[in-house]
Image (tube, rainbow, N blue to C red; front, top):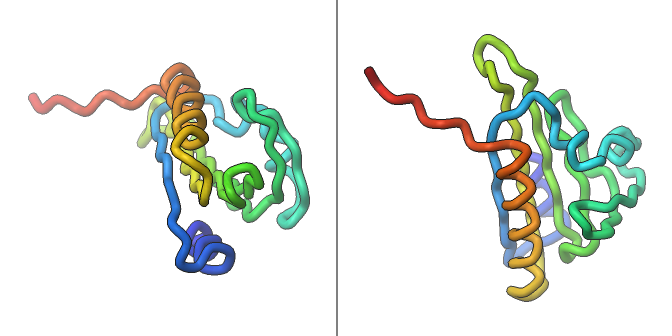
Length: 134
């Protein structure tokens, strides 16, 4: 709902490019991406961070029990939503997710962001292998 609210309130009728990453891991991507300080700022508060070699800034869009949304000025006033579930009986390897919404920009910028994120995500939050039926 927060992503929809963001698109409707800040980017009505604008094309969006989205990157989606999901995987496992006991460590939150917020910690792995060194975004803990940004994620703990008050909603609406500003932040600055080095995000996989890219200097970013924006504000905290929302925070919930398992998710954090940060606007990213350099992505055409985009949005980064990061989620994590600790390991549990239901998810023994934990679960992590990131959704990146980029507005405007060119193919080169999009490809650069995608390349950095794919490499980092594959190393830190690999995809869970699908269950093989007996």
